[in-house]
Image 1 (cartoon, helix red, strand yellow):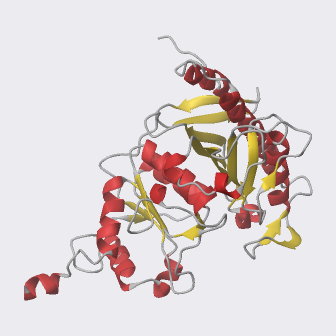
Image 2 (cartoon, one colour):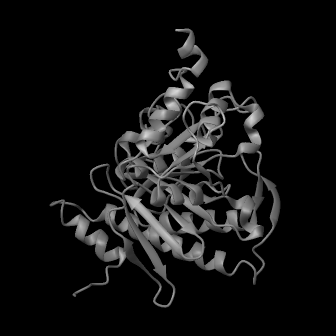
Image 3 (cartoon, rainbow, N blue to C red):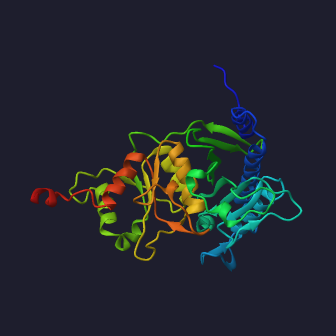
Length: 347
């Protein structure tokens, strides 16, 4: 048996060779994202030993308490990405406005949108957390600072998307296109390299009978959303049941499990957040791209997440993603296309 060790750098180079004439800028951008991930991983793994736990006392643009590791992750990504000439601007969950590239640095052809540390409310209890990122090609003329127009692009226009999960191991998962597959790299701390550990990830089909949602909000959901979950639990006499409930409360971790094991993750709208809670540009859209490239689907309950045209940097959306057949089923329930047994009997 012959085997080879494939680092993320080698994998990126191999992928670049498939595109004759590539300048190397896009590859270099991915290298820098991997570097930022290593810096954040080191800090997360040391969190209990150094003074990076706890809140800063500040509130971010979304009204959420800022954790010290949020600040570190934000700075790590910004400093890894601002000077290399790849980007014309950035967007982060932690910043209200576009992040400009400093005047002394070259402007590049790409836009980076990211959530530096998703699930940061779980930091102090040692639950897995993560980083989510999305890359777009700028659409305004080169040589000038990026504008909001460069950032407000629908998810189907993404050049790359992925996430890093910081858990029992640190893993970086990304795709560079719906037809390019999804690949996962696990950080080997002994050599400081991301090594290819999950080649061409596919969401299991037929799907695993797993659903993931915060059922504490059940009373706030629409009747159709309640019916959907009752179906998974086998409580409504509609032939469902047999599903396992798995919910961590960290988006990256919940999606990572869904990607590898199958099933469906849901963050539905409710009476307190009728427009949904997850941000389109740097949470929903990048995970939707990964999901679709792995053979799954992502929806806001009625339309494909990748088709949504965002109007603001921090627009929110409901999110249903995972195995395609289960996302289809969710849409049917939410649209009222699944009849109740008594309605069928009446007809």
